[in-house]
Image (cartoon, rainbow, N blue to C red; front, top):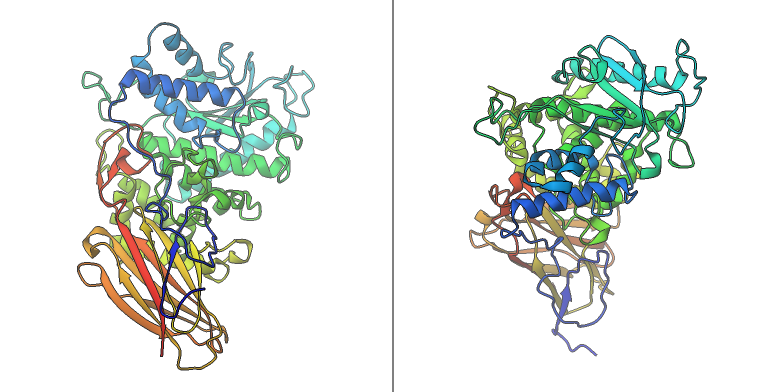
Length: 545
């Protein structure tokens, strides 16, 4: 039995949606995100071997989702990019294997689409390469070169239209590879039976320049040409959601956007590469809604994980977190909806800030470039992180298509009766949040209030808090807590059971400060080490009259 005015300790757990009804010990890392650490001692050869193993795991079929999402959440597109960077540190058979992984489809030795792709059909900008025999043959193949399977025509027409729409939206056209691929300097698309490997598609490059080598003429030029591969039929037995044509459409939009990204900066942070490519799927083909499948692994489902986290699958439920981060761009482009052509201009403006082509500038990294763009729109990235994290708690009314979204969960749900108090505490990592939900218990008198006491890190290190009162009449009162420099504050709000359903105390770490280029293994912006992670946040709620 709890005594009057006793303090009930409620930890905020990584296992979200936790409801605790009795006293329990506080765990110091209960707010925590994926808990990854940087391995500064890892050698370049070891890192290259890890990337090689990762690519092999993808090709062994250990993959689910667009771009080759593996059980550790990374994409084949990004893994091949990293292998291209690191393969010079591999020796002997490992180097030979890496070279094989970086061969083009149809060259006879590549592991993705084994065998020749002898035929092609081309439009003004795109060439599609295929075969009409064996497992890689598209539906409708008859073995006659003069008749083009309808699926091949559909792919060509779809990507030509996507290319036209991206250019009309202001994006740079993908760089050309000369005569490679036999496409007369057009962008190459390869079709093959990649579904059994768990792949929807991927893009990569065999551009020979090395932007990391000071002796290379292309030193510090991080733009590359690219080619892409798509499945040859998106058979429903391998791709059970959506129709085959719809899967082809959204995959084409996603993968071709990678080719466009490569014309700006192929080595940009993985989270922004995959999250913006997933975002654009729905912008191009709004009725398919395939990207909703990723919301359960992203920041909408896991608000306590940094927005810029490139999911490593540790823990497993965060595998592919970066795909679900498309919802961050949906929030931003709904707030700033101005379009060029079919697409909201905000994402284009960010990629322009990230531009690392030869002679281009200013070559910012992901969150840095986004911060610049938001500043030019009269706001700042910290303010938008707060609004995003708070709004996700009521996603159904917060987004245009929110009725299809599951709102972000509370990290702790705390029921408070008369003259009772409870607190929740733990670290919150950068660009993440945790919500303590306080619900009134048998407080029938209108005079009852909830006094919230905040003990957070200093404001200069990203601490912020918002209190949201949900009333039974449907009204919502939202207040940003005025913290002092040390991160402390008190806020009192109505808490009668007659009028209040519950109160959210949303604690946010808005920091985007990093020690950049800390490790190629870093899952965060600029391969960096966040400066403001692991700081303890604490909120105490007490019922008063």
